[in-house]
Image (cartoon, rainbow, N blue to C red; front, side, top):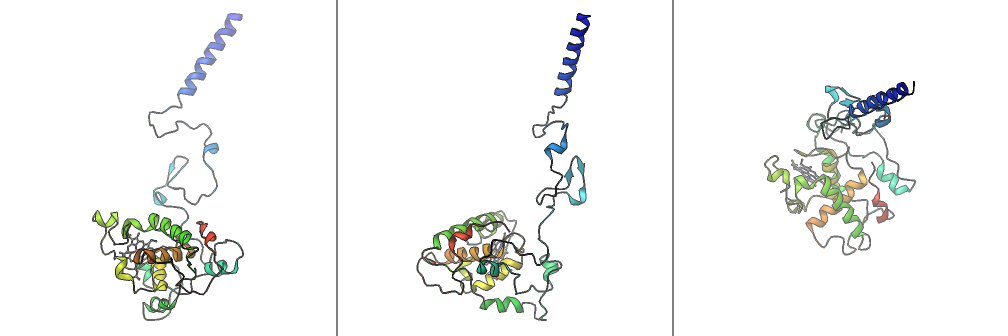
Length: 251
Ligand code: HEC
């Protein structure tokens, strides 16, 4: 009887090991067989999950696509109750031209009703950067701008802003301007072009919030003029958006 129990124990152990090793896989990127997938994979909607593969089911139509990109229309990102911050996040009052639905994928946006296609772009020339840069906060603003630029723009516009980013050098992209040739371009038009896209450049509205874009505009100015921000020569309307609030990166 004792022998029988021992044998039973051994057999159970053997099967136990077999069961365990059975979960291994030769693929170094695979975690092996998942006995309880619910514990590894969240069933909640996750914004940046590739829903092409969910629990082993491949859905080709949504493969390699982020589930969330553009937030719902008129969404205002919440960064607190500072009035100037809230004002900055309100929907942009300059509208894209209706052709940008086709050229820049701005589907279901509110388009400019002016028949002149670039009317809003022309009007944007009067818009000033609402984030005031001073000798005191310049370092923080330009550092933030540089970080955003390095991640989102450098590959096309180049580290020095000369239009020689890696995408251009590799031959994959053409027509990227040198920022030195854009000195006359106003802050407002820069913002408009970055926000809605221009020519071969796509819209950055789904990627950067308005404050981040204005920050990058400051950074481009510093590329054009190394002295930019070092003296208090700027005078813009909003003064209370202080440098430490530039830390926010969430949309
Ligand atoms: C995929 C490549 C690409 C990326 C990424 C890109 N740009 Fe551009 N950018 C271009 C091209 C091409 C143009 C020229 C558009 C035209 O005038 O037809 C341009 C033009 C511009 C202009 C001039 C707009 C005007 O009104 O004349 C500014 C300013 C600018 N880009 C800033 C940025 C910033 C800031 C970023 C990052 C947030 C960025 N770009 C990302 C390709 C790119």
